[in-house]
Image (cartoon, rainbow, N blue to C red; front, top):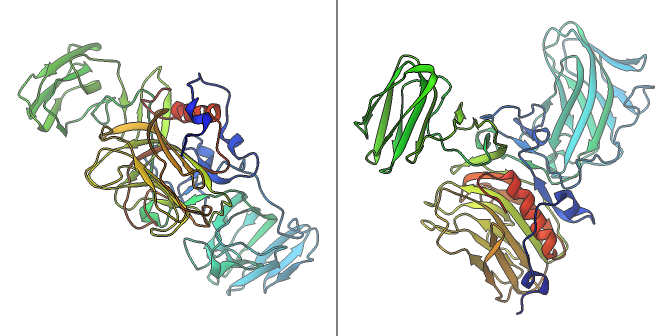
Length: 505
């Protein structure tokens, strides 16, 4: 099978004004996840608490492929201009364009029938205003329509005064039309008044962590990557770390002293003033190195190499910055149980493209970066890093009724950062793999027949349970649509490279 002309003629171009949303302009299915856009990431799986600080876990990532637009309004008279469409439980009343519950000592619901039923796996956004709340106990909860993927029980809603947003992913047990706003039975005095209730589908294939314990972690680092091996470096304290047997350089300012023990007997390094930077180059053994601090040691840096380079500030392992260097953002998977899953996606086509900015932190065990569909079934695709235990590669698989896979050479040893692209074409019998914009592997074996079928898309683990990925993603784009031309592939890779550390195309 011959390679399409657009791929044969593929050429590198400089950065252009480009947004990945253009890849989905004709309604193509898939997703675009971007950690650098903090408005799309939430600590909780309900999407009520935004991610704001490195080191926070991520429970929900919103898909940007549909522009984060909302569907049709599902609530009638959400402004309570009248009580039409609402069923008022004991203690509820509609008056003056608002709905008020006055505590009775028993739970009670404000109920309406949505104009359309919830669709299993889809994400919905509820907006409402808490005008006042003087309840002495209890909580505002949502039931019926809202049974969410992270719980089959009622969901506790924010009930502080002000405008509120709550998101949930519907599951089969919650598919229906009835919306219940409950107040729990523990409230024995006081009242709560709400207004402007709106329920709309948040269009897209949003990625949700399977449990709170399996949430990956948000982090930042300089575009050039992390060099400083220390932690809490603005004012350094005694710490230990494992080093390799190559030249290292320690540098700091201040009047204190750092003594090296364990892997090295070099030094000590003694500071000469708050404005003076001193340095020491040494070669340790491959072992644990302890740096013992006495006195004031500031702006500390330990790095591989024989030269003290520009200072990188390290707060925690997930919070690294450098003055004058752009910051990139990532989501890190722990290689144990961290993962996300989208609702079922129905491609309706036999062509797909996967773009990923990733850092692979270990080659010890096979890891799933992204996988569409369950193991052993037809109409699937897989991006892996690595593709097998104890291998130094990436792998891409695309298949209709016949399994076909391709892997990079064994020259991508972790830790390593790359922009990886997988292009699948079932009827064209092509599975092509690119690393940093260069084709590194291709299979032209027969992929059988059929389209990519209707499955959830898993990120970080197979089916949310197996083959955990140990590494980071700086951005993921999966598109089910017609083959892209060379310039669009290049533009997409260049865009992701701008978001990924240590990669420039």
